[in-house]
Length: 179
Image (tube, rainbow, N blue to C red; front, top):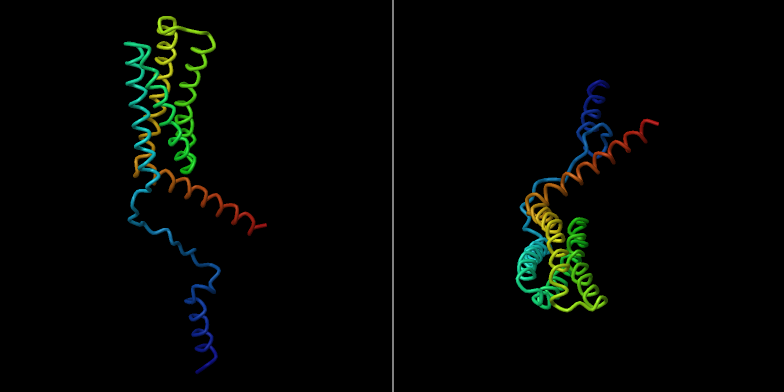
């Protein structure tokens, strides 16, 4: 073997060894996988649906008979807590806000009724109005979170977020290497 042939074989060996080539494209393990939906995501969607339903039923019942908030208020309070916990685990700020809104509005109405000493007749108009205003904003947010947590959209959104973070990391890495 001549020197040129030996050099060519050695160079080819070096170029084909993927671990030694600093100019090769990074290998990625980001292959599509067939994952099952996260159980936290499924539970969150169930709780979101229950909280939205409770809001709608509670407001309708409050306009019909204000004393119905004795039942719908605690239900809304206790459904909001799992929404908060699950949204926190999944990192959903809007879900966290929506979840907190249930206990918050329930406590607000309870405090107002007790602090001001309202009778059912006194509480009918102000509490129904507060509930209607709350429903206007809370249902929009709840439905936004509901559509955002659909398994396909949730996975796509988090993948896009991860990819953009990965791209930013690659840009920072490239900037560090050029200095």
